[in-house]
Image (cartoon, rainbow, N blue to C red; front, side, top):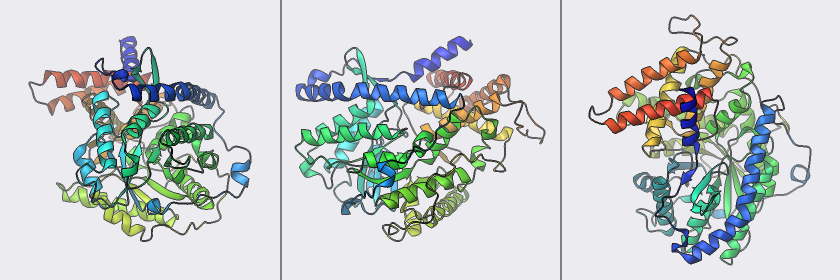
Length: 513
């Protein structure tokens, strides 16, 4: 059974594959354009992926990421000239690009920035990708509902360098990042855009990766006869190794970058993935971790200092607890949590918030009354200790494990149905939060003999494979009970979601998937 579920996990982790009906050569001009890009950039993407695996393997053998030696990136007086059209980023609101209704609401929200997401909030399948790409092109071209009257700057988050796309180039995979960018860029009438094309770069892990993105941006601009610095970007700090190379990463993109953003949910998943061998990093229950825990605060301070040193904006992280108009108590709690969270970021001199719901916009804006904080800086160590274990923070309980199991199973069930972001117990779960829960469960099993997890009666409960399987069985029964009794396909999907989830946890397969 274990061999079968491990194989199932591997099958699920295979790249998104275009259907047989898709033919790159149906549009000869795009085919020639894309094959050129593929030849130029996909080999580099593969090499960068291999380097990531090497760095992770070293970390699991005790060689954890660390700051780089001083260089021109950290010692020279370079500075970014911020375009006026993207100088206000007091609230960056992200929505799954595949959901046309949410895209329309976001464009009409009056949030300074709207981020149309092809990554974390999207199921990595072809129908979702097709819908998301079409909605992005419509929004940027001004033909989507509300696009022409929108006051928001629109950024596009494409899939990250870890993801491959099958079925496009015959006989081999291609870079999903490259494919997403190329399809959107090729379809746009650049002269009709309200502002230059703007990209959000996800899940980078090294300064070297910045050069890949830089070179892609330059080649795309040249294809249209535009200046090499035409395309602008936000870079999201959401991988632990990148935290130690942020200034070097920004330097590599200095002709394009306008902001550094804290992707704190993905960052937490990456942090505990890299430190999984250390029992000191066994996480408390996710929902008991405060927003101002030390490992977040030090990274926030570093992001602000690096950004403002070079004329870049610093944007805060997503708050996963979402408003709910149908439940007054839960709604009030979510908005209260949001206000405290964003007030903390403003006090730390960040220039804006990251949200995911129109009802969060007004509260976020109130915490950042000015478009930026004047690039103010405080005395901050340039090489801080970023791995501050969560000692004395939150609780480690069986209830927390149970909630994580439920989140993993329910999220995977919805992903298999084509939905990449789903509200569970008031929290918006996406690929990042599911990954946190997956790693957290595995940590508790790996270090069960050394780290106590309190049961419902306060006595320690040993976390072994049998316990996790029993919790998944309970969660499966509960989820099935919510389904239509005649929906056999849905019941099969729950069973498959459970098999994939258990296999990933027991095989310690934690890459975004």
